[in-house]
Amino acid sequence: MRRREGIAALPEAANSANVKASTALPALKKGERRFWLGPGFVSGASDNDPTTVATIAVVGATTGYGLAWLAVLILPMLAAVQAIAASIGAVCRTSIQGVIRREYGLGWAALTLIAVVAVNLMTLTADVEAGSESLALLSGVRYEYFVVPFAGFVGWLLVSKSYLKIERFLSFVPLLFLCYAASAIVARADWAAFGRAIVVPHFDFSGAFAAGALALAGTTLTSYVYMWESIEVAERRPALARVRSVQNDAVAGMLAAGVSFLFILAASAATLGKHHLPVQTAGEVAAALEPLAGRWASALFGIGLLASAVIAVPVLAGTTAYVVTQTFGWSGSLSLRWYGARRFYTVVLGSLALAAGLSFAGLWRHRSRYSSRCASRAIERSWASTVSAAAWPRRAG
Image (spheres, rainbow, N blue to C red):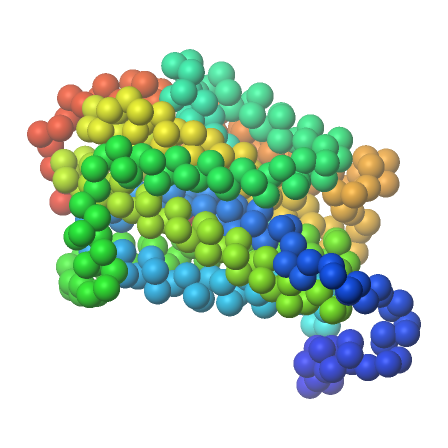
């Protein structure tokens, strides 16, 4: 009870004169911008990772525009969770995992560690593969040749502290998600039907509709997203006067990612849903658009998919390392060099190596013998086929 009271008292204590004097945090200067483009856009964009893209595409392929209202309805919930995570990082000066470890002990922190890392490794494996598939789709080279270089590039980015140098740039990478909007336009989505599906919710008690609703809700609210939000805010140690700006950044970043959810749903419903094509991975979705909506739609979707992987993979590997080190009280941060955080960076590289190994082995592929180009031809030959139920993408949480 005392621990919970201590957490509840943090906001009040943060406003007291004693705490303000001890922390010596700078106040917001006159004329300084209250809204700042920061970790909220990177965290929000990471929620739109390739596994989420694949899930939403399967939902569109099986239910059409029927669940567009749910995609809109969950956005306020996602934004609220991100704002809470940002507030924890700003006020408590540590991540959500750090608060759990400090206030509730190693036992609860270990349970959180197991849950977060298990989901992260599965998602990281799928996202490394999807990033490689997107490069294969755009270049025409088999995806296997990109798996190790892609994972290695992300590892170098994190270990060499280059991530911190380009993080501001990464906050603008979500602009590439506009490619999803362009692909939906090229695919000639029925915007009138799409609008009606949002304004007038449709309920169906079929298995595909229920599974689609559960998958859509489950894939968008994942632990690494709000963990990373609290981590990045805590790393910056913003002044307490800027908590509102931090919350605004988190909300705006999530809403920006949520808009891309809608365009992915529209593009997949207009193409895959119309022709009843079976897909499992985000790479297959991008490849399927070529025979259905033209080469430009496939290329645009592939660019958006690559942007999703470029943002999500570093976030997933970084979150895993932060959660592990904060659970066991090890020193670790992306702001430290290798010799100052060996265990931290060992976890980073280990998670990427495991993900690359599983991706290269094809463990998560339904048909490992096909590259994205081959999948495109196979899908084109199966236009006349229909499916009674879609096999859902590999995603937990």
